[in-house]
Image (cartoon, rainbow over all chains, first blue to last red; front, side, top):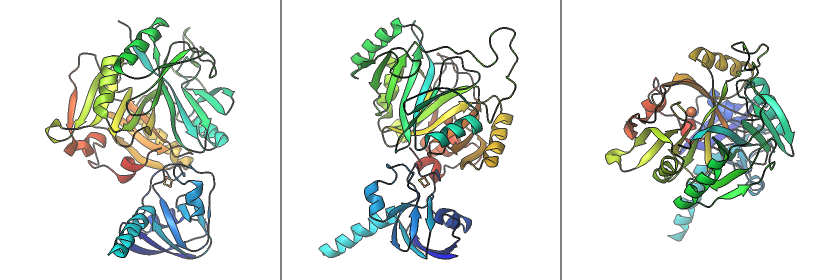
Length: 108
Length: 304
Ligand code: FES
Ligand SMILES: [Fe+2]
């Protein structure tokens, strides 16, 4: 069992994820509101940024949902990845909001 | 009066051709009718033309093109002129660009989707034939729909795309969803056959696919489709329910590339002179999911 720390919809969650589960599936099993769509790597709704931890992203996915550049920058699709250690993740939307907030702070 | 006969074919991008062909033949229950390049051609058992679905390998999901069949070859020139007059650019696609297809007129819809009109396409016949036919063929696999039924696409300017279908392609509008004061059109359901919709649009990003629907006969078939999808562990979007819009019975699920599919049954018959039904945007939950009466995040946001 790995421990996943997730920030999504401005909330923080902690849950366990078995090595044979996707972090999306494990979250849903705990009624954690992980944004979910196709569960097939096609729509990008489950996109998040991995802040810390090891994982393996299924490479066969829509490049519109997750481009090669995003992949290289630590973004992943939670519906089609395998967790290899404890994981600290934030949804792509929350991550973007945080970046905006941080840059506004700096500008002050 | 010249007439667009039906939504004849849809081409989808798929991430893995083998997996997708297995899904569309075994789970959906279509028949593979040919291959060319990176594409596989399929049809439903009750369809007689060479194909209604093309799966094309890509590194993204979504719609490549949709195409309507017109009644005569001369209709191509007729609609070509009307489309140009509306302000869309047309190009001719030559015969045999794809397998079994004659010449087509290509244009881009005001919502950014690639669309074609065609008349010529290879003929294979239904699985039961036309002489003393049985009602259905023995040895059907999977959901085994009768046919490709309709498409739901997303786009920004639904007023213009509706005007295009009504004025240029002579479609009727069976239903529409409007915001308060009729200011904005956020849903538009259009038909050229006698079904409640052959193509529909909901407000959203341009050029995206919401779902491709296959027609089954009854609620029982929708329910059986749901059973099969669980057996094959296909992810659901929505389990069997009724639509307020169209009154049809429905189930939504995702193909191996994340393209949404629907098995759709029933719905009323649409007629050219029927009055358009209007839904208030505040009632859209009931319009889409008549029982649950609210939309879901996945249904609204998962697009390919
Ligand atoms: S849910 Fe669609 S890509 Fe993950
Ligand atoms: Fe539909």
